[in-house]
Length: 217
Image (cartoon, rainbow, N blue to C red; front, side):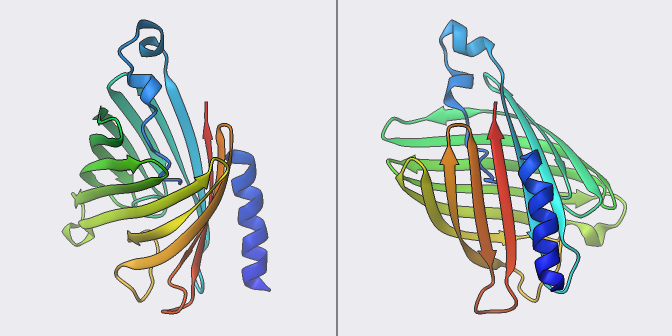
């Protein structure tokens, strides 16, 4: 009953607000054409973490892109009750194989404080995308809090409105018995809205479920 209550609570939290570390680069925002180059592209994703035998929580990420400039604000991502602000540069190359890269640097503050270099990376071919978000937090207040974070996915989208894939992550935002968590995902898209469910650690330990709603505007 407690898990069901957490599920309902977080669903109500996530759905109105909007991680598809769907931080895939918006190519129109970095186009060389005059009109697209002047417009900003924004995205908001909120991830609801249903942690077994732990505290469930929500983690919002807001991103803004203008040509090569990429800005991000995160909360409860590196750690709970911790925020981070990021700035980086967008790069995109390729035609059939499209490689997007956004190297960044961030300032982390809250329960964990520090400086974090990182990157958002994606390689897309037709209906398949491999993506990774990686960062290393150099903690300033407590060196033992320095940590390598990563979120990695391979996603297949057989149709425009549905996608599924495999995912792994390494995090200290919550604790499990596994250093690297593995799982699968399934999601639905409609225009600029995407909802994805991730299930981690099923078959290894009590599964963690992550509900992600993403909005682009």
